[in-house]
Amino acid sequence: VAPALKTLTLARTLAPSLSRGHPWIYRDNVPKDFGAESGQWVRVRAGEFVGYALWDTQSPIALRVFSELGVPDATWVARRVRAAHDLRAALRLDGVTAYRWLNGEGDGLPGLVVDRYGDYAVVAAYAGSLESVLPWLVSGLLECEELAGIVRRRDDGSIELLAGSEPPETVLVEEYGVRMHADLRHGQKTALFLDQRENRRTVGARSSGKRVLNLFSYTGGFSLCAARGGATRVVSVDVSAPAMEAARRNFHENGLTSPSFEFEVADVFDDVEARRARQESFDLCICDPPSFAHRHEQRERALAAYERLHAQALALVEPSGFYAASSCTGQVTPELFRQVLAAAARRAKRRLQIVHDAGQPLDHPVMAGHPEGRYLKFMVARVQKLV
Ligand code: SAH
Image 1 (cartoon, rainbow, N blue to C red):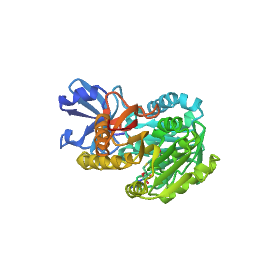
Image 2 (image 1 turned 30 degrees about the vertical axis):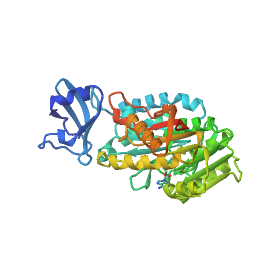
Image 3 (image 1 turned 90 degrees about the vertical axis):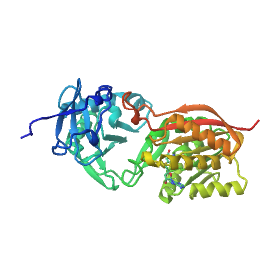
Image 4 (image 1 turned 135 degrees about the vertical axis):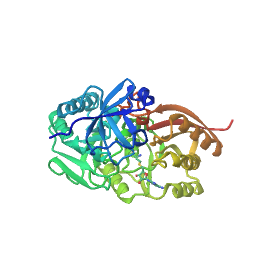
């Protein structure tokens, strides 16, 4: 028997943000005497606002608002899954077989992410309370597509089979004609950095005849696009040996075999210094570091580290060459990112002329009322000498 729906009245100051569609209510905003079981639906009120939220006893976000109209059920969740599927139709038409099917808050299912890799779906749930929604999510996915299997990726990296059969060691997927192996068990994120798809394409279109350096290359996404785009030299650098092995395999899978495609397992900070000492230079450098700041308190140190990194990397780019930089943390706004790049350029005694400025692709939508959903920045700039 489902427990009776509890109503929780919150400060009216929360109403504007909630009414604009921001789905998070932090624990500090919940009266101390309120209690419910994790995963229980709660009717929340703040001034004129009424919403139906999932209560979580563990995460800093105590309540995630799903609906303003009523308590969600399996049918309601299946509709969100279907709407998210519809939004990605253009990608499927383009022959893209790996994409984010459901982007949590951005698709109206807070805390839940689904990535699709061919016939498999990988689910991630960012709070314990979401456990109760998972079965509805799984049936919603199966209603849309005939999937071979649905697995869940846990924080500790383990996977759990939710439906169908276990995925093979790697699933071969395709992105605008580029084939890539996705390791759903051991890969970072859910296997690939799907959010960089359009940016990889941008790099591919700018690589013809160029010497390309790809820093933090992971399984070689940007490198593959550069090589296919006609780059004369492609150097991939990443500290992870398995990622580099996967990059080699991906090159092979795409029939890209040449001694000018180089794979370097190294710390980028050291590698860049070594190349500078050897006076190497490149026409295009891609720099897509991991997030150095997960929390607000880490932001200042992270910004300093980014500035140093970009300054070092910029020194390897031939004047009038291009620098493509990315940042994947929501802690750094696009404006701040631009400032960091400008400061890095100053250090390297260069100017950066931005020619391309991008955010998240179609399959990583951001709700207008939830700015935290915007985390990805990608800028391409021409590197100029001081004049
Ligand atoms: N550009 C990639 C994603 C990069 S993710 C793509 O499009 O798929 C960040 C990568 O940085 C990871 O592969 C991680 O192994 C690597 N990494 C983290 N710290 C590093 C360091 N100090 N030196 C080299 N690589 C590092």
